[in-house]
Image (cartoon, rainbow over all chains, first blue to last red; front, side, top):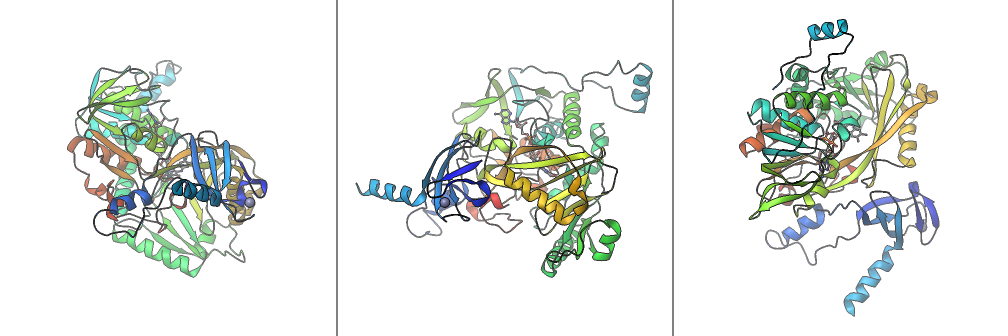
Length: 99
Length: 419
Ligand SMILES: Cc1cc2nc3c(=O)[nH]c(=O)nc-3n(C[C@H](O)[C@H](O)[C@H](O)COP(=O)(O)OP(=O)(O)OC[C@H]3O[C@@H](n4cnc5c(N)ncnc54)[C@H](O)[C@@H]3O)c2cc1C
Ligand SMILES: [Zn+2]
């Protein structure tokens, strides 16, 4: 498995570290404890879709450009379907939210 | 129910007959319309559950439904190490229960599983690591588990060929669990399958569960590639596929699936007589009775359902091996493979009811579930039969994450690729 970093090109796996599911979003606001909201936090911290197939996930190019990447990868075959810089993904979602 | 037992008499009889009279070890069962209990997943845990349901809880109208063949999952892919050298109160009694069951297993199931209590030795390389192992050893002894702290001299007499004087990671000693060791993994699957079959359990291979039958929210059976099968209760023991199967019942689990690789070398004369783990990197090794070195290290670290891994971990494992045991440098690798780990968020397992009535869960075994096989089977059978957790598995609740009652043996937090 090799990852094509948008900044650095195709690189070996040992240059990257893995952070997991990129589709999780942190619940808004402070954790109100106990009570409402606690459930959303538990879900965010502990529960995962863990799909068998395409998975959007965060990788960090620590031994390269030090970008966080959102990689779409098939967990059944390890085929990499798409790689984007995480910062661009976040900007695009913010724009969608504002529009 | 069949009664033909394996014994010295049956062996002699078959020797005389030229081994023409052996029968298949279990029936090739076709699914019936309904069972009291269906276990999904014919790995070690599913088969052990069926065996204990039938032998200890008197529930014999049971099916084990397996999508592939018995022994094709992790139960036939692991590195065969069994031990009960745990630290936390939720874990120690459970794994010690498992160790005690291993000690009587071959009599219980009338099958030679090659249980070999050759000892598990965890090496330490710094004062801080020694302190941590002293603490672990004391926790074990307080729970009645055997543990011995060895100094460097004792380790050197036992395994003279280790790299003791490495400049960065000198070997200062080790924590030994003498009752730990190895068990032939395939034999565990086959032995439980045969023993359960003899008690009337149907083992249904090549039958994948594709959904659940429900009635008013209650799970009342499974949809399979061989048609629907009704059940009083359904227990999931799907290891690396737990999330996938649970999602068919609308559940999201605190689990990620990861790949762990293992390696076997060409056969060598016996020279390693216990299981050894390197404390300064992730590497562990034992020698099989055929002479092959069986070794492994860390999981690859990314979600995977592929049952194969990548080069960086292979390099890392080999580097660990060379740092610990330079003499294996010219040994040739015979085989290597990967298996799917159900990595839970705190590194500990789940044996519990689920929010869906009639559906029970056994999952989250990470890369240490082989040693747990007998106790996992016993406790899951207890839960299915009595609807309450077994005394040694009360901590393994599904809601412990939301309650903040995690059992984080490694102290890593909710980061499954680090457990
Ligand atoms: C390389 C490697 C080394 C390991 N080393 C050790 C070790 O030294 N010591 C230790 O204690 N543990 C070790 N483990 C971990 C241990 O093997 C597992 O935790 C344990 O085997 C999991 O339980 P199981 O045997 O029931 O799993 P499995 O044998 O994987 O059983 C699960 C079964 O469920 C079936 N299944 C899945 N989905 C479906 C479906 N939809 N329908 C029907 N059936 C389905 C699968 O086909 C599979 O057969 C290791 C694992 C690996 C991969
Ligand atoms: Zn880069």
